[in-house]
Length: 239
Image (cartoon, rainbow, N blue to C red; front, side, top):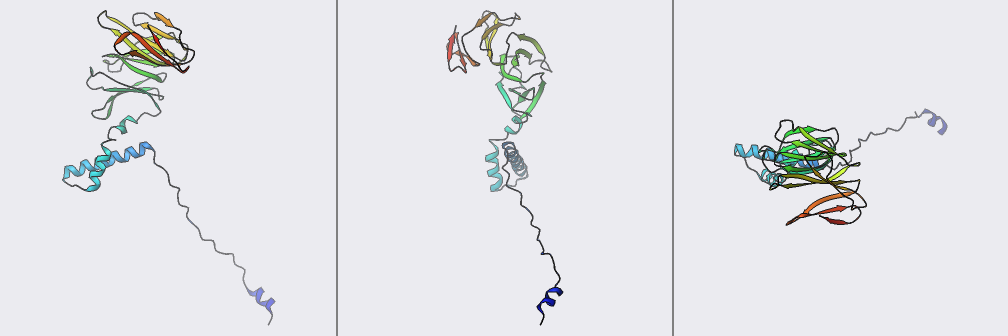
C-alpha cells in the first residue's frame, strides 16, 4: 500500500469561508430624535382619541409627550441657540424670540408651536431683549440693533456702534414718566456703555472691569443702581 500515491490523488481544496454579516453597533439617539419620536407618538394618541380607540401604550405616550410637544419646534434652528427672550404680548401672534449661530432671529407662537416669522441677519446675535412693547434689542458682533416688531419684516430702525469687540449683554432702561428711553451694554471690551436712543454715541462710559462683561441687571426696588458681572470674578454696583 503506497501512501504517497493516495496523497497525490487527493484534490487540494480551499477551505470554505462562511460570510458573517456584521451587526451595526448600537447608536444612541440624539435629543432631537427622541423628542421627535415622542412628538409622533403624541400625534398617534390624538388620532386614536378622535377615533375612540384607547390603549395603555397611547396613554403612556401621551403623558411623556406632554413634556415635549412644543420642544420639537424650538429645536428647529440649524445651529446653537444663543439667546431667548419673552415678549410682553403686545403682538398677540408672537410670544418668544430666539437667536442662533445660524444668523437668524425666529419669532415664535408657542401656543401653536410654530414659527411666526424669521429675520435673517448679517451676523449672529449674541443677546436679545425686549426694549419696549413693540421693539427688540439685538447685539450682533460689535453692533446693537433695534427691530420693529410691528412691521411684517421686523425692520431694523436704528443701529448703534461704539464697542470694539463682541457684545454679550444689554439692559433696557426706560423711564416712562420722563419719556426717557435708554439702555446699557457690555461685552468683551470690558467697558459698560450707557446709551440714549436719540443719540448715536454713548452718553456715559463705565470702566470698572478687567475682563469680559457677561451680564447686566437692575437691583430690585432701586432703579438708580445696576449690577454688572464679569469673567474677572467680580460683580460691581454702578450708579
